[in-house]
Length: 165
Image 1 (cartoon, rainbow, N blue to C red):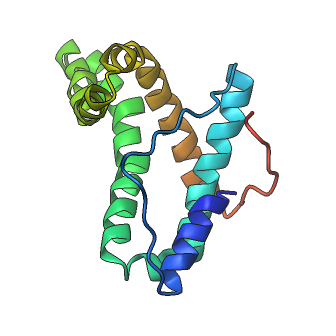
Image 2: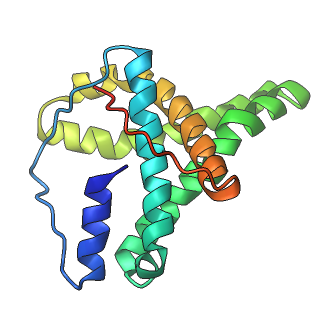
């Protein structure tokens, strides 16, 4: 489902290095409505989990890749549960102060984005995208948890490739 990830991890497994150009900038085609975004996020989430299942033995051997995947899995599971369920439950049951957890999450993304945006003179554009990030964070959390549940727990892999755009 995520052929670019599969290719990258396969190259690592074969002993090849994978590099990137830090100056490269990508402006992807964004889904124009929720229907297409849902397809895209579903495909990406299941693709990540499927690649993890396929390549996990080799992923843990490569220190950089292991760290990236560990952070991604933390974000996909623990952070998503906190973001979607724990923070709202604590805000209702204990105190609204727990809603500050959403504010604390922002700098982890906003600071590196602003540094890169400053280099490209796109700070206003980056700040304007912030509301979209909040929505995307919620949707990503939902789709990643669903993918982890269906792929790992239920053992029901996604087979249908639905292009998001």
